[in-house]
Image (tube, rainbow, N blue to C red; front, side):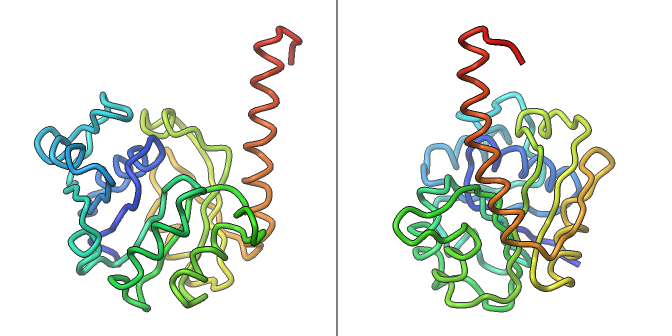
Length: 207
């Protein structure tokens, strides 16, 4: 069972996930690219840039990959999709090949057509112990502990179950799947639909 979890990315979704995991009692090691943000989180246990009202219990933040990844039992990858490869390649030297990793970023890489889990596998040089998480999840609502559901997909059932246990709470219901490609493509398409829907709302064109 995991005790220490690295969360890579301190944006809105990363902050919400850190709140969820820290609230379950896991020791969370949060990576943020900005050292000033890391220091602020360590001092106040709040992220001054994203969801500042949300407490981040059991959390230590740093901009140093080696420090964040040392001795972790799981890696939760939550950076914007455009920075997944760059970030994964920078942290790869400090990632243990046996450590399970799940990616919450959504999208398809320009140029290669790779899904986010394929980018992660390429950067880490391995395909095992990897999973993706996606669903009708809104970071702000998850941080407020409103009822939500999600799915963890992996080609390895034990990896999917591992992350199901890691994320499950009384308010965050986690299902598992082996349809990794389907989950990732639906997650990417959902973002496109959300943008179009926002445009329709702004134009007062109705539901």
